Image 1 (tube, rainbow, N blue to C red):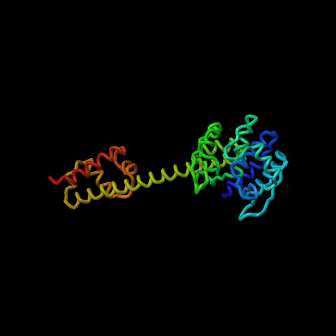
Image 2 (cartoon, rainbow, N blue to C red):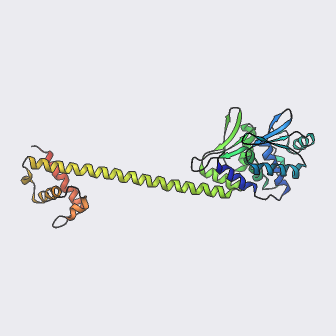
Image 3 (tube, rainbow, N blue to C red):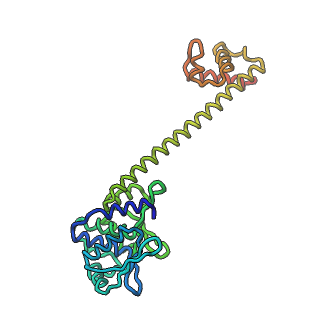
Length: 290
């Protein structure tokens, strides 16, 4: 899990939840989206220590339940095997095979439900790498789609090695979801990174544009010089009009100056467009062998 995801979850765990119904909704999201089942009961594997502490606290406060916590890989494993606790979970939250909408008692419950789901089953990439937020889910697309529509944020659904995943890759949608579940600092970081990336891309585009213009100017300058030298070699310089001959002579004397500087060297001065017109005439005359 990225450090950005860990920081986001740490911040979410610090947000106080006062309403009993919202605590229940958050615990339901934690359990429903991440619970696995074995012969001992249900279990969860979680990397973040603060999430573990919040999970245990909610389990006690909402259900009066107990759980066992052990180290597992790079994180922790929560196991609920106590019969009374398992019975309380089923009674309060249903069989965990589909989202139970009856637990949402107030307008904030859905937000806390998805906060719990993200804490235990979600992850988010660091915004300086790519935009991607996902939450693993045991629910089928049909059973979770109605709940997601109430959220008002459009997720996509995929199946990864037998595990359902709802995900989003659009930065604006990720920002909306983070703000919705209370992770405003992470949403702000995402917006800042997007602005930084856009500024960098604009700078690169301008650099590429400038480089292309320089190459075009160098190529054009070489074309003008080649035409003038050709006229010299063929002793046709005196066939040019007085104006064109002045321009050709100045270009030979100052081969590396730009069009603006070269135009200013004329007596009287001419405009850049006027100089371009003269140089074009010189090239046409040099290429005309009739």
